[in-house]
Image (tube, rainbow, N blue to C red):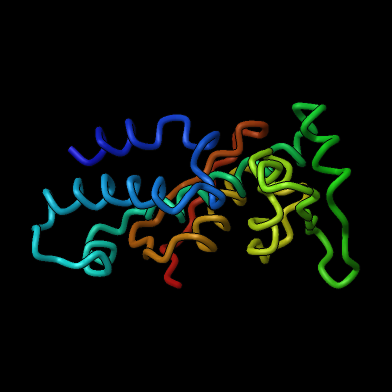
Length: 174
């Protein structure tokens, strides 16, 4: 039940779900999110209890995760080229943090914050691991550790599709 609700709720969320949405729109999204989880886990539980039991990402955390994933994918693959150029024009490297690229918001008016290149400033500061030239599996694992507070209890495997090597990772607790 929840997978159906969340697949519909978050469909295309990389485009429209971000921190600069108005408060009322964010409340609507959160309400739908928690209504679905209350049907499964009980109506009397608080949002904090539901988050702890369900181990699902809140809409805000999901938005940050998907935006960070987009940033890393675009910069590491250099595609799409126009967006890549926009990101590089609004970014800088620091010597103290090798392997990381920081972006800044170059918008003049409030409407300028809606563009993807300006939205990345909030997320690039949260990413604390070196992510330039990182593999997709490592990127996902590190982003999940950064944005989600649940525990991975099962060991999982990762397949490097270029070499065909299968790696197994132990459970991670943070």
